[in-house]
Amino acid sequence: RCSLCTVTYYCSHKCQKADWKAGHKAACTAAADVIYGGPASASQAPGAGAGDRPSFVFDVLQNDARKFAPVASVMNFNTGTVTTTADPKAMGSSGIACDKMQKPKNVHGNAEFIVKLQPPVQGCGPWMCYDKQRSFTAQIPPETAGLPAARRLLEKDGIRLPFPMNPSLYGFKGYCYAAFEGSRVRVFVDKLAPQQQW
Image (tube, rainbow, N blue to C red; front, side, top):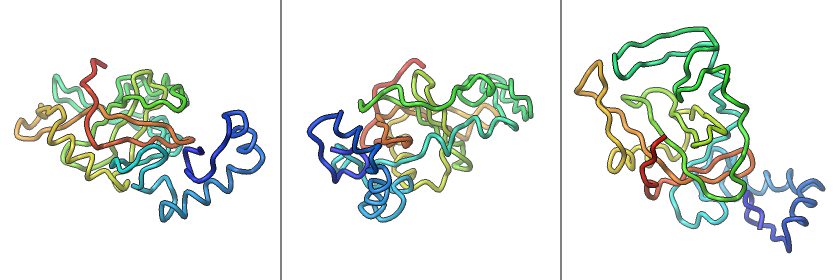
């Protein structure tokens, strides 16, 4: 079954691949828009295999953190200092120099994988999301449908981090299961994945 539109079934992966190249890609995107009530990337509706799992979707190409590299604000959580720079060698929020971040790609195939999800402190600004391999690093727009459910989950079960410059403020992070749907990543917010060491 096509994992994007969830409408078309195939006898094999080979047939699915051939149909995608023969024109299913255009029809599939249109069908997904109808099924999800608008562009699938802005939808909160679950994709193939998601069942009724709450989730949100973002496009790794449109939200590639490398696009935000020319001006980077970086906080050192040990000292509380914030540095804003136009240096592409500056460390991005994922801990990798902006000029060393690789172009987003799917290294997971159709399998679910774990992502680190971190909302901004005080809820203002984009969310950071990346996988262990750093095959993508995304800044998710705050208006993305489904983020309120993700925030509730992180506040309830996630890792709570005090903000060094103001100990009365807290940031949150957590690890969630996710799956690729074309260039989009669906992050499931029904439960957190086990805490990771990356």
